[in-house]
Image 1 (tube, rainbow, N blue to C red):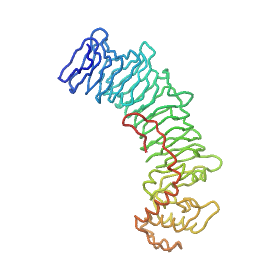
Image 2 (cartoon, rainbow, N blue to C red):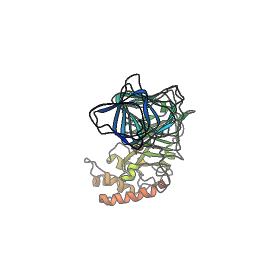
Image 3 (tube, helix red, strand yellow):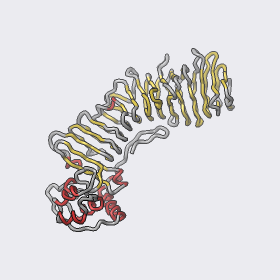
Image 4 (cartoon, rainbow, N blue to C red):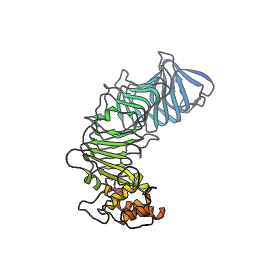
Length: 448
């Protein structure tokens, strides 16, 4: 059927049976109850535009062929159970829309490019992207997303990911025997790879020691075994929502690492970050041997180690301490000297022991130097005083007991202005550092 310049409307309840190929034009459907069956010799779609939400089913073993691309005009195409859609020549899915696999398969016989506005998703069950008789492969510039609990998407064909591969539920698996252009020599090279809570991403037998791509692990149970051997980050690496990550050895960062709320990055031995950026919004733990890295890491605060949460809320800061072979950097309330999440008499006592003294190496955060200027003075006292809460030791009496100046806690707005000015000075170099991200899929962005 030659449909160039025309539109076939499939809007009524029921099943529409079309014989042979549909060439050109648009197939439109606004009925969730309507479906299309393509039958006959070499049934298929040739250079067709999909508008609305179209479902296709097929009589086994007949399967539709697609040639000269599919264009999505904001709608969706659903392949239902037992349908295998063969893509005969090198072509692309273009426009903006969703391609749902409901127990069905995409079979490229040549190179299939998924455009930046197109998302391939599983629906209700599982889906497959698998090889046929040709030398097919997939270039993903859009989104391939597994989204069904207990469902999965299996990819067993050459995959070059330049967009986003994500798992928000269930599993997405790339077969071990697939040619995998996005991974080589221990390096994950391109695209974004996102794993949500209680979801699993499998990249065959890949063992990623270097990340040059974007990797985002969101939530407890986000399983991505291939990234566990990570030793060098040159791209964008993010953990969030309670998803912790522990390195198998030293970690070198020349890209960007985001440690988001409730998540902890634990590094064995050393972390090298002199030319990278760490956005610390919970905890960084370094379990070291040899010399303590505390002074080196503290020296990077405000330039190579920042906290977007603390920049937004100047009553927060990056606290630090060395417990002997373990260094902790933690997002904390300014004034919480011992990092126990309370600002009370214990913290005030630590400050008092260093007040108006300038030790050779500085007292550090645990000694009351909350702005890391090497001295403990009235600035640090006011910072602590504004956050002080200890009903058993009220601030005026506590100050008198410890021999500290009796201060009046300033108005919150004044304190925020003061602390904000300090952070601006500390972060003067931050504006020259840019968070790197190569996510290109529709509706996706890195964690912050």
